[in-house]
Image 1 (tube, rainbow, N blue to C red):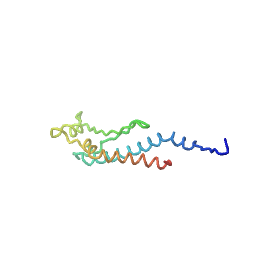
Image 2: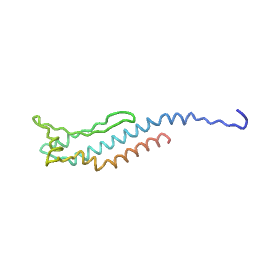
Image 3: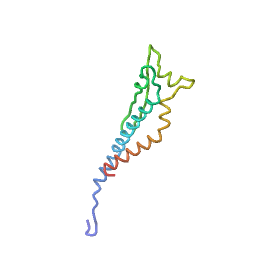
Image 4: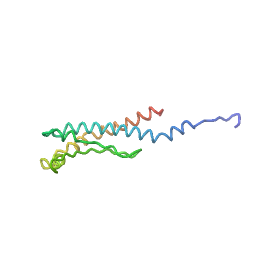
Length: 129
């Protein structure tokens, strides 16, 4: 190296850059789990109570995938002597169903998307970005 030159050590930056996809995935997974929890609570509030309350209780969530490919789902199945009462309430009742799962998702999806983005940003900030 000449006496007019200088050296920049980028190894720390490169390590952080290489770790960024994992940070983003962690933030997205946390945000998606928060959104699923909220979706489940809202859908339970909207579902008919019914004689036993099982329709609300049996709304289930599932977080699938890993890394940057994750997906959240909500389902509801309540059977009585082979009849899927939850399906009937959600899809059939009154001609087009009550859609308590779909409606709550439609009403809140923009908010949840912003929450997921915020969780990703927070994860990146915690990691030094």
